[in-house]
Image (cartoon, rainbow, N blue to C red; front, side, top):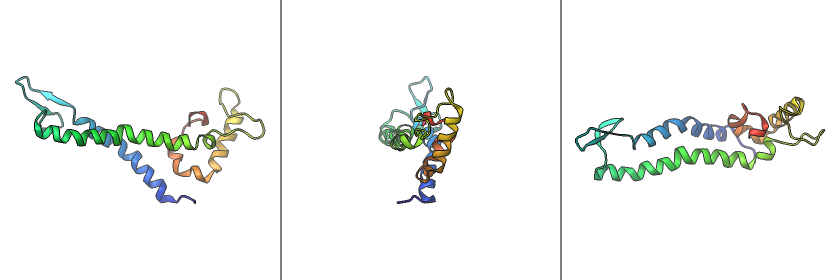
Length: 135
């Protein structure tokens, strides 16, 4: 089954939302202690930290940490790991993998091979700026 542009955009949405989602989830743990026994969220001084209400929201914040700063990089790793042989293929003419430190031409050949592979298009935004060995 070929993948359409919709699949590409779905993955790029996670790429665009990764940083703001991670920042929002982690900001929940950044409390300013006022020195009088009270602490408030640095991003929202109307929310007092360590209260019962804050503890209820803690569950959601931990879930979002599992989704954003942990889950998205793991998801990307899983996608790339599944395609690692296509991302860093062996050059048919030499039987070697392209390594810029060993043979620049082999590396350019490998990049051309992976650029021609339509199954890698949905993931290209994750690897196209890197040498093949760093899939």
